Image (tube, rainbow, N blue to C red; front, side):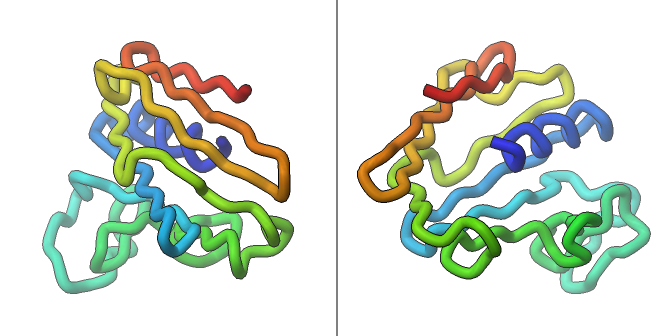
Length: 128
């Protein structure tokens, strides 16, 4: 949820689209800048961008000191958590909306599962 909220906040703060990308096969997610500014060249790490991005447009996570890629298999307290389903890419826009349809991610831990719902019009996130 924090990664999705962060993606939405980035799009509002920087007034351009950012994308939350989940991969059920690798059980991971990453956050990308879809319109890096001020330097939109590719093939290089762009540390002067706001926020900094690498050559794949993945943003820099200032808390971890690395690129914003979270793999539930190898990251800290997420052992046993899996991304069961959800859109591969969820884009947020500067006015706060993501898409015009709701997006759902299902995560599980053992026998427990939760559904994260993102309202496409408002960008509001809820967990059930």
